[in-house]
Length: 367
Ligand code: UD2
Ligand code: MN
Image 1 (cartoon, rainbow, N blue to C red):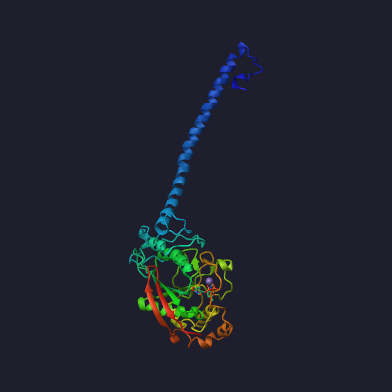
Image 2 (image 1 turned 30 degrees about the vertical axis):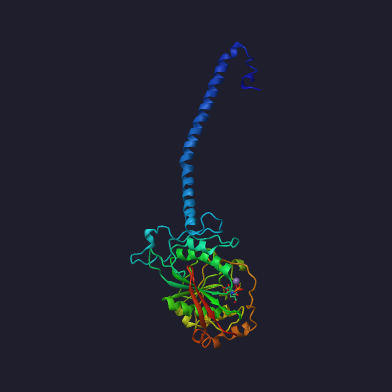
């Protein structure tokens, strides 16, 4: 059926229908004109309104995208969104004396963290051009508020270390910290001793630089939000407060495992960490007991900012649960003054400066 075949039954196609036909034409023209006008108005209105939003969106994406190019791996498919540290720093980063702001303006908040695609050390080096040898960094735009040594207890966890470096170096730079990364590698195949390695890290880092804050981190834990600052607070800081492994909460209130930060003063006040916890478990509770016994409390970020991921793993060789841990924890107050930084003995076997960290291989002795 065509439009012309639709006749008005009242007009019946007679000559008297002619004025009606022209009226019909005029109406059609009017309707078309109105529709056109409406379209033009709509397009004009939407172009101003919609494009502005679109433009804003694109700008946002470009900011993230250029950050990605700067700080990650170009076009290969690495798993994260880790914005850049090399952005031009806005003027408000500085206060009048040149100190960095209390809250870094470079922070971006929540981060995507995944461990499904292996990361290559050379790519991490390329992505962090502002790092100095030994994984050292100082913000160039302002004077950092703290000098932080990051201490990681380690043995045979290379792939975990790569993930840690990949995710955490950009975060720490955005946090505008003056920091260095220390991998304290336990030599040999004796029982693992995490807390003793942390004590050694404290001592060895201080030989390098006048650090005033010490962050102790498992190699397999990565922050999911860069507002979780790896620095010290007026009370000992627990950093990994909302781990995926524990459903993004604390397993128990006194829990102090994973990642924590103590100032030099807080660390010396508790005589450092115990050297006598061989194998898995208990040393973090001992540290908590030390802190509590000195009248200090635990500072924590909220459970959103404090979200962290731990890489899934099995228990390592020579790190079985320590059967003595419950007895030891029960006696922290009696032992802490004689077991700690004041009784620490170890031998440094190697000290290697790599681009992304200092690796100190140590003989920690036997149980
Ligand atoms: C929990 C705690 C950890 C510590 C440990 C008990 C969390 C998230 N972490 O970790 O802080 O209290 O229990 O000792 O609750 N490591 C090596 N090579 C080894 C063994 C250990 O590098 O062969 C290092 C590494 O940094 C690792 C850390 O020690 O992340 C803790 O060991 P784990 O990861 O096996 O223990 P996990 O996850 O139960
Ligand atoms: Mn672990």
